[in-house]
Length: 255
Ligand SMILES: [Zn+2]
Image (cartoon, rainbow, N blue to C red):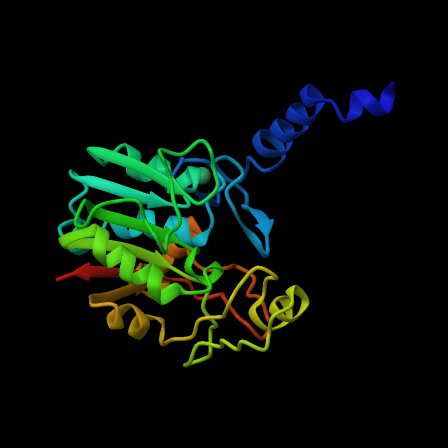
């Protein structure tokens, strides 16, 4: 009976709120620039102290939100049009839903999306989206070049894809080896058992090859106080060979 009670939903929720709203509440050193939560530190998810306990945002999501506040970025995105969010994260939905005129969520599997589709064979006509968002999705797709070609096809001329992928901090070239074909091998070489590669600094070239003009921002774009406040870089870097500490946001514009 006691075990049942301890694992019940009300007790679970009470523990969550005790942790989030009391134990993590002060001092308010960090703030989520997406949901507004403020507290002592974020939660640990892969990296220490990076996950917002309220909206689930991680570094890449908060970097996207911070980028949208930069006039040079905001002026180039047509958020008043159709925004297509692939493999949509709840936290980024909070960012784009309130800005977009038409906000469309699409996913390969999830049933609570507007569209169910494979990113390499999208069920959309050409030139229908003004902005496309794909965060940490391409590394799961065996033929990522085909997905990038699809992104290019469904964007209007002048439209922009906002892209993130896990990238090695130090590798210039993407590590992709067809002989690494087991979950254990992928976890060891790429960092996760369901990743098809670990991108290097050449990711932008791969996007350019699909016909896009590419620009990129990272934590270095922002004031160090903003980086520390919103945790736009891991406070405790991960020392694994495959890296992923220095997250970058790519803006791929269709000419
Ligand atoms: Zn948040």
